[in-house]
Length: 118
Image 1 (tube, helix red, strand yellow):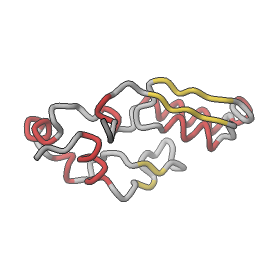
Image 2: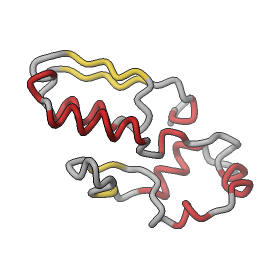
Image 3: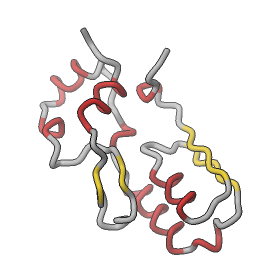
Image 4: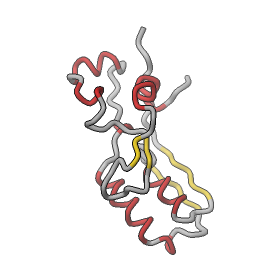
């Protein structure tokens, strides 16, 4: 029986990774890192296990790292504001916005592999 991508990743990624990124050590995220055994599974085997969906959201991408760092270093730009993070990926920038003092944060992405339920 194949698991949906999100179910498989979450099942194998917990507990969350503390200090997942040197650039943004404040964040604790459930992401795929090179220290996890799933990282070393050959691509073809992983795609079979993950119902042929690349889990793009399971990574902390460089752009998200940079934006997260910027938000945390410039809290006055975010404090008291409402934030919509479009194409949020793993949600790091949305989390950073909330940590920086945003009143309300919505993290949005279109990757269907993130859906836990149909």
